[in-house]
Image (cartoon, rainbow, N blue to C red; front, side, top):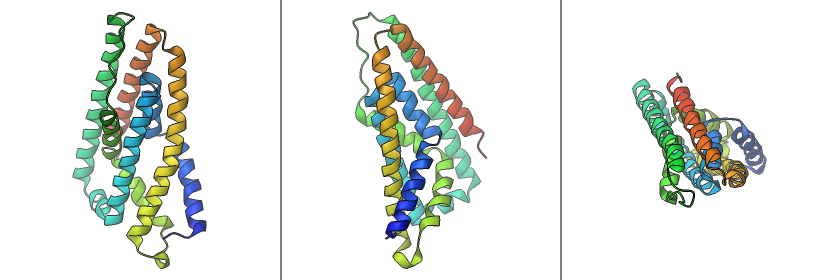
Amino acid sequence: MPDAATALQFFAAALLLALAPGPDIIFVLTLSAAEGRRSGLAVAAGLLAGVMVHTLAVALGLAAVFAASPAAFTVLRAAGAAYLLYLAWGAWRAGALLTAGSADEAPQRVPWPRLMLRGLVMNLTNPKVVLFFLALLPQFVRPGRGPVAAQIVVLGLEFALAAGIVFSIVALAAGALRERLAGSARVQRWLNRAAALVFVALAASLLLQH
């Protein structure tokens, strides 16, 4: 297992990395602002599940195999962009449907499993995350501290904890802002349409990765 100094150093680095503007934190912020903190927290849980999948891939050596395959990288990138465009279409239509109904109609709540799946798919279909974990985690492995795979799993859990703290704060803050604006159908419509544009931008960014 990593020693205490290494664990603290990695956790501090993970917090800073989680705070840096990136697709995951933007995804949580956007969903929370458009659909509320419940959606943001559920999506964050899915993203964290993706973090652990990437961690296991690095620990088992699968990430290195994937990184060596340009074809796999391209397919995954295209799948991620397509999924983001699908979410963009849904968010844009949600804005239109909100104003089409009466003021007394409450939008149907998306089940938690579906929201978590959004975050999981978003994380797993971003090949940049694979390369990021492949480059980051081994730097904090100490061969004399036990099995390398076990150390990588512990580091992945640390990263998930740090990211979870940041994502939760972002989701709660953005969700609170949405609640203050929830009385205006016009504001909700534009929040959903802004979310759609963000998803399109994320899809474009993913397609432009090399």
